[in-house]
Length: 334
Image (tube, rainbow, N blue to C red; front, side):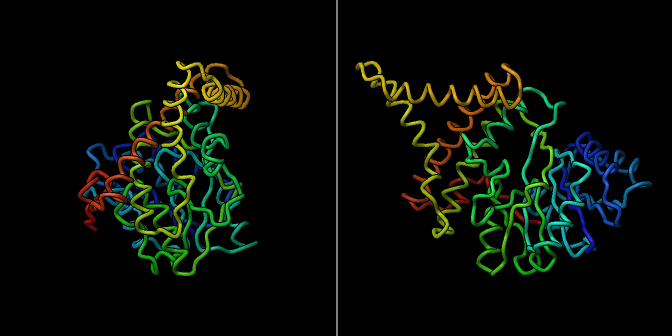
């Protein structure tokens, strides 16, 4: 099986350099190619790529900006492999990654897989706190952190693989962003393809992010979910409402506290204490324990607010998603 690694990039030459450096020390000893798609960047990474062409089989393409989903599709259309592996540019790849993917596919083949993400010691404290918020069982149920309890795992596009056959049949990613990865997963299921988590095929996801960018990102995640639910009501879950309910519950618990009813606010305080202890123990850092409280709060408030806004506009008022939230849709140009 010949792998094609597909990497869309937008104004991130330093990230591409780190990613390619990590692939240089891969223990995978079979041929594979790397397809890098520059998505209309004003700061291209062609000079960084030239450094690695002597040691890695890299092809590089520059196209007009049309978003990460369309750029991944662009790369898969021109790739030579029969199985595509997709990374975000802010990922660092463990040396065992490709060998692990090959082993998983040999043991139990699947046309689409996803892997989890982890944090390196070199990551900033904020990056580690955000990684905890995005991967902990206490926040997302461990879905992004490697939980195998899901009957149908939805691969995330920062770390996923898809066969050439499945890509051609599904036509790849749609133009919604974020939300393009669950959209693709559901369409693959409807076409009869299976998806699976490869628990040991994780990447180190840097999440090039500060607090404000993190809030904006999770807010967009929240806005995308009711849109996906309106497209695929069969796959809607009550758990998608939890962040919004968390916000309302916290507000109500504060009001009740002033009326002498303390139990609800104590429940919230206990939950935040669990977050602090869990993040602190996992990272062996009190600082990251405290920062995790900020990360989780921004995650719930950002996602919950976005979900509520989108639910009202899309599900109740029946507005057209592309008109209600144009910032979530790219115009496909390739």
